[in-house]
Structures are given as C-alpha cells and as structure tokens.
Amino acid sequence: MSGLVLILIVIFQPETYAPVLLSWKARHLRKVTGDQRFAAEMEIRGEPFLHRLGTALYRPFLLALEPIVFLITLYLTVIYIVLFTFLDGYDYIFGEIHGTGEGITGLLFLNIAIGLFGASLWVPLIYKWAKKEMIAVEERGGSRLPPEFRLWYAMFGAPAIPISLFWMGWTSYPHISIWSPILAGVLFGYGVLCVFISSYQYIIDSYEMYAASALTSVTLVRYVTAGGMTVVGIPFYRNMGVHYTLTILGAISALLVPVPYLFYIYGKRIRGKSKYAAVHE
Image 1 (spheres, rainbow, N blue to C red):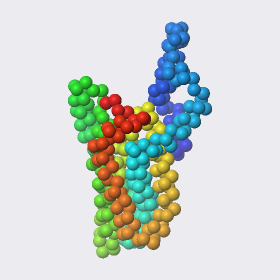
Image 2: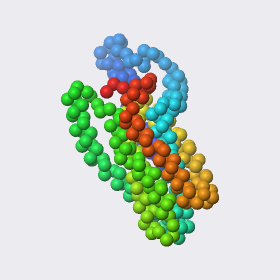
Image 3: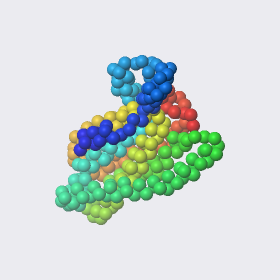
C-alpha cells in the first residue's frame, strides 16, 4: 500500500522546490525570448547531480541537531513509542484485566480514532482565527503569520497525552469499569493528532525550503525508534505491569509537555540563531 501511495505521489504531486521551479522558469524564458542571460542560481552554480543528491541525503542528519527539529523529534518519538506499544499493551490493558477477546480488543483501538476525530473539530475554529490574524498582519505590512501560531494545536493537546496515560494506568483494574481506560484512549488520540499536526506545520513554516529535509529527519528517527520499541512492548507490560508501564510512559510524556509552549515563547529567538530556519516575518 505504501508503495502504491509513493507511485501516486511521484506521478501526480507537482514540484514545489523553489530552486528547481526557478530553473524551469529560466529555461522557459530562454526558449521564449532567445536571450541566454536568463539563468537560475542553481544553474549558475552548476553543481553536478551527484553532489546535489549527496547534499540532499546528508542535510536531514545535519538538521537533526537543530533545537526545533531535535525536540520535536524527541516529542513525537515518545508519542509513537506509546502508540506502537499499545499494539501489544491493549492485550494486557483490556484482554487480561477486563477479559475481552481478541476481536473486541482490536475494536477498542477505535477509541483512539474517535479522539483523532475529536481533535479535527479544532480545524474550522483555528482556520477562522488564522484568517483574522492574517488580516491583522497584512494591515501592519506583514505577509505571513509567524510559525509559532501553528503551535496552538499542540498547546491545546499536549497535556492530554500524559493525563490520558495516567488515567488509563491508574484505572485499569477489574473492579473499575472498562469504560474508564476506553475514554482515556479517546483523550490520548485527541492529544496525538493535536501535537502531530502542529509539529509538522511548525517545522514546515520554520524551515520553508529545507522543510522536506527537516521532516525527513523527524520521520526517520521517529519510526526507527518507535518501531524498535515494539520488540520490548510485550516484556515491558508483562514484567512491569500495566500500571507501572503506563505511569512511566506518562511521566516521560509529561516532561515533554512544555515543548510547544517554550517554542511559542522563544521560537523566534531560536530560529534567529539558525542558518536554516526562516526569520523574515
């Protein structure tokens, strides 16, 4: 399925990389006017394809050390570790404690999906807010909202993740209704989507031309680390127990809750010290 999606993207996704678009425009102008003086910066530099390819492959590792990319990668990695270990953990949380069968346990992942849908309800409200703020920016002579505006989603959702994990961990007992951990999973799904959407939007707006490299860095580390944690998911829940496992994961995620708030306050200053981030708003 992922291969099919990749093929569709390659075929139908238009080019968005500014230097390539300028190169195409310069080539078109040379063809139309016959004036060979039209040239894009990429053509003037005349870098060989292999050199440009090497730079593109190396840049994600370089951007991984950027404070914004590093902390957001760490944050999303922790969230994905929780999400991936739930693939095994739900058997313990619901199967062993509440006696649900495999089919019902699988269906209970819908609680996370319901939370994801709940987070999407913020979209029209924040969109209207963004339009209002954009009008105000244009009246002041600006051209775009600061990237930090994108962090409102995360600030609305970040506290939900540790709260949901503590809630699920501390109420997963046979004598407590199964609806308690189910509702905790809804809250977790809500927090995940809020943080995920906000983080990607913030990186895209912060790094602009280098956004693809920054997102590559985030995605690579997140999936490699979280995917590896699925191997230890079963021993973790089996040896530590549901309550301690979710408490530990909740405590780790709680330490990262301040990340979007810190970037909202200090993000512009951090971007100003970066050679890759955009600071022209």
